[in-house]
Amino acid sequence: MNITPTQITQPRLEIRNLIRRFEGKAVVDDVSLSILPGHVTCLLGPSGCGKSTTLRMIAGVDMQDSGQIYVDGQLICDTQFRVPPERRSIGLMFQDFALFPHLSVGDNVAFGLSGTKAEKRKRVTELLERVGLLHFIDDYPHELSGGEQQRVALARALAPRPRVMLMDEPFSGLDNRLRDGIRDETLALLKEEGTSVLLVTHEPEEAMRMADEIALMRGGRIVQKGAPYNIYKSPADKEAVAFFSDIN
Ligand code: ADP
Ligand code: MG
Image (cartoon, rainbow, N blue to C red; front, side, top):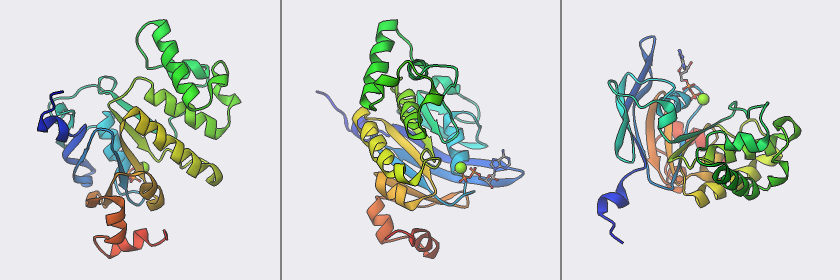
């Protein structure tokens, strides 16, 4: 096998110097990040710090004022050039990104798939089996519990094998009792699929549990980046210490 150093180190997703202003105020203020293939990076920060806005620009549903976005080293968006959202190979999972109520569970998972009927069926079956919900394939979303719907949404997002998965507070609508289990299951499946993930959360505990790398965000800027343990042990400043103080 021929692997060059660039292939080893090339990030799956890279964003450079992203800026987004609303009414003259930079809510995303010079944010740069990269995610290696198969890694989970958590963008962690308090409510209103610019996390969702960052994700929306990467997804292509909002446009930056400056900065660039690359997937596998290829430019997908700058201020002059823009690959449309559906051609970015980016999967989305948002808290309020609900399943299509009028489609069966199987058709929800098949929604973004191309290929023959048999190929689609194979991928849908494989994923539903993997999340333990194959028996619901012909049922409708309202017949499932919140946690089950969440697992179907994950299967739907992963089905087309996106190069990058963006997750915006995907577990915040779930009951506390279910949340840890679903976090662990989700992480296991993401790792099996080898998906690179940018997961947004305001909960330090979630980032500590799921991330390979944490990017700590505040007031539109990344204030610290690193392995979860290092950030937890050596927060960059007093505000970071305070932010982490409710985990023990
Ligand atoms: P987070 O996801 O970290 O909670 P957001 O990215 O949603 O933060 O928002 C960051 C800031 O940008 C907030 O102050 C929010 O009010 C503001 N903002 C977000 N979207 C818009 C918009 N479309 N117009 C004006 N202000 C916005
Ligand atoms: Mg948000």
